Amino acid sequence: MLVVDDAEGIRSYLKELLAQQGFEVLAAENGERALEIAAAETPDAVILDVMLPGIDGIEVLRRLRASHPRVPVIMLSVVGKAATIVECMALGASDYLNKPFEEEELELALRKVLETDEQKADALPASGSVGRQLDADDDSYCWMSKKMLAIHAILEQVADADVTVLIHGESGVGKDVISRELHKLSNRREHPLVKVNCAALPEELLESELFGYERGAFTGASARKPGKFEIANGGTMFLDEIGEMSAPLQAKLLQVLQDGQFSRLGGQVDVQVDVRVLCATNRNLEQMVAAGTFREDLYYRINVVSIPVPPLRERREEIPVLVDHFLRKYSAKYQRPLLTLSPRLVQGFSNYAWPGNIRELENMLKRVVVLQSEDAIAEEVYGATPSAPPAPTPEQLVTSLDLSEGPISLKEVARRAARNAEREALRKVLYQTNWNRKKAAKILDVSYKTLLQKIKECGLSD
Image (cartoon, rainbow, N blue to C red):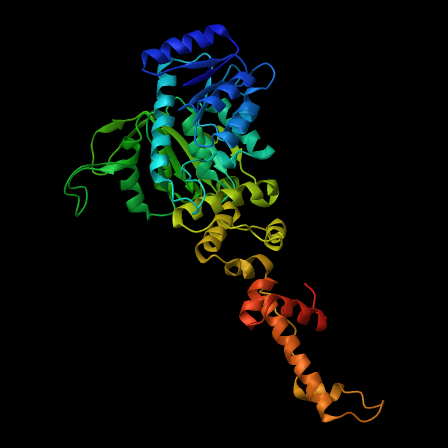
């Protein structure tokens, strides 16, 4: 274990604590010394302070990731700023602890990163195949833009306040990710986060799903079933698409929020629970309140803290990070080579409106990875697949001949027709291959040099 901290007291404390846990500990008082030790003897894990004299901890982390990409690094800091945490996680830190920390916190972090590292080592693909394995629950890629960092700062402020939070925005913007992050930051993180999509079930099934039922409550209820609120006791309940909830269920939910009590279907006794409620919607609840389709008292209950999530078209700076993440994720998942997108597609992504937001981008890239072709999404991104202008018909070719300069031989007519046919064939294949000349040469069964010469003779350009 390599411990890097400029405070001698912290180094001594960590050396003693880690030695008791069976680790051999090397210590460094600054970044330069840490890099020297890591170069001489690769550690199994690094505990690294953010604030260091000379080379700071973030730069040390960056260099360690370049030289030792598989060594887990736990960052330490007195100041837990959201921007710093996000930067560290984006650079590949495995965990982040605020000073002062409890022994149990450090032990849990070490156990988590070392177990994860072993699992990753076991799951690594053979040399030459796809890139690094990604944790499906790793959402650090989401916290890159200024707007998302501002949301993260709000989450940190309200994480332990135990108030209800309403997350609202268009479908696919990442409301699920925000709910998971808020739960991770809260003091309920060791208890379950339970999600229920209110739009996915009819009213009768949704009520039994949320609140459970007693034996004999209805036909087929052969035994008591606990509801999601009971399962989430001590933790967090995430109600997605709450705007789809019926009026009777809204009244029952209001009772849970006010008193922490509810009764199962067919039950006579109230059940007491301690649950924090997070809600999400893509609908305008204020308009629904005005129209009488959503209870006003419930709206004010769930809207204690409101988090509006902007659509992807207002966060375009995130697109390159999201593209890289999803390409790596699905290349690893489906065991496909890691692709590099063409400049044309990258530009198309920048100009696209993204009505389905991040979810739409993820699904597009999943198709590209699985099919190993950008053609799979060309029509969606560009509006319609570009097509070459049609070749002139024989009638058009004859009509276009200029006879004012004198007679023209049939041989010349045939030569021009052949050249036009050749030009049309070249144009179509080049469009189909997105001007991939090597692929076009293979399709046309000519050498690469011949293809380049023909493109020049036919006057074609990208």
